[in-house]
Amino acid sequence: VAVDKKSGQVIGWSNADAPKGTQTRAGIYLLKQYHRRGIGKELYSRSLNFIIESQSEVTHVNISAAHNNQGAKRFYESFGFKATGTQSTHTVFGEVSLLADDYILDIEEYKNKLKKEF
Image (tube, rainbow, N blue to C red):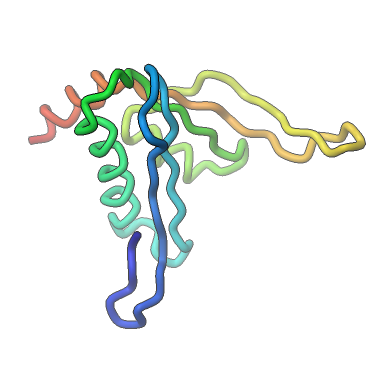
């Protein structure tokens, strides 16, 4: 959880599902006015590191980003996520309500990327 030091307001969070099997999910939310300050990167890095440090069998992390959310796509790609396809959700009347792009991160590739950065 990220909290604004001045106001005490919660401004964002990141989480990772408890690792089970070889794949898991990790999500993030950050208020728009706090984007592009490094806060999201720090939050999300902690979730990915939790997955790594859990010493589980997880080899991949899956996420979905709204199809038209270019900022989210760039954010996930900066960690090494790769697009795997697009899915749609439908209303009860069969109309498309949301298009989302699916992404996957190879944990070993992410760990190698971290080694190169330090």
